[in-house]
Image 1 (spheres, helix red, strand yellow):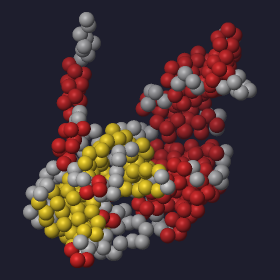
Image 2 (tube, rainbow, N blue to C red):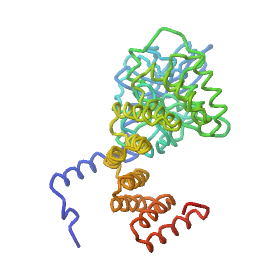
Image 3 (tube, rainbow, N blue to C red):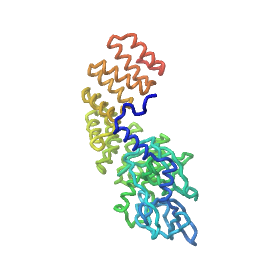
Image 4 (cartoon, rainbow, N blue to C red):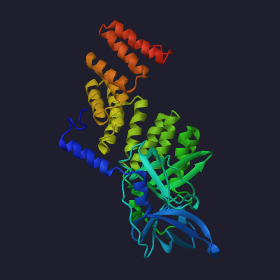
Length: 423
């Protein structure tokens, strides 16, 4: 039997060991986070509990939770284990639904704070809170969607969240706090969200003495995501339009309006909405990327290239944006620059099947048939059911007089899609 690390360097072995040591099990994450999770009681008139939620200890005597948990309270109490403590509101950002409490003598451990900027869709996450009054309940799931917001990413997750979970922690695989769970359920769809930890970090500087807002940004955003999941573009367009009127200086509102216009096939209006989002926040990577998509759809390749370049200035490690930039260069007839952009996408993500297919097309444009064939083969290694890649491979084989291979490739395309006229 061959040794496990037969060809590994010492550095590789140490890296593997270090990763293994730091990988946490669900139980380890629970044991760590439970020491920093509290129950928040909103006491109303006649000493009755008006509402109950969860909270997370950021420092001794300092707990963060959702604002809707503490809204309208006559007094606040925090419970950890069998001990109950009086609490007072410290900082509040009602629009983002993030509030903090001060508690004297709490004596609880603080969480380890992470970041949503390194999260990926599909990553494992853990929610810990007090759903329906059941203290310290753990649920796990994955990140099902990430939506760029100011400072970080709004998280949609499959980790179960119930009433009472609001204000609890969402933790990544390393046990680091990446968000505060909030609960949203509508029309039979269980959509679970967490506000990003970056909003917690911004709390002190954004805190105001203003009272609770009628409709916080989280409610607008939750509704947008719900309508997007249902692909109800007319309703999303109407909702986003109302959002821009209610919060005209909110870049996310204008971005959502642009997205809805784009889905409705109104490229010109989509461009205008994205431009407004970028006037408010010039560092909004997602808006630059979507603006590039809208320009590309409108046939404005030069402007699309400029928009994608702005997105990559902000985040040069986004493989999808490099792929889109390559497409824009290809549309503009700049095959060399298209090849370079696709290669950047594949440097970041070697398993990006679309980028391999597009790279093949660019090599074909540049007259490099052998490299085009290799690129299509890579695309098909990753996704063997891609009819377009099979057809492109067949055409390239035909152009290089490899007729038998061309027939076989086109037959594969037709097996996958019998209605593929070009094949």
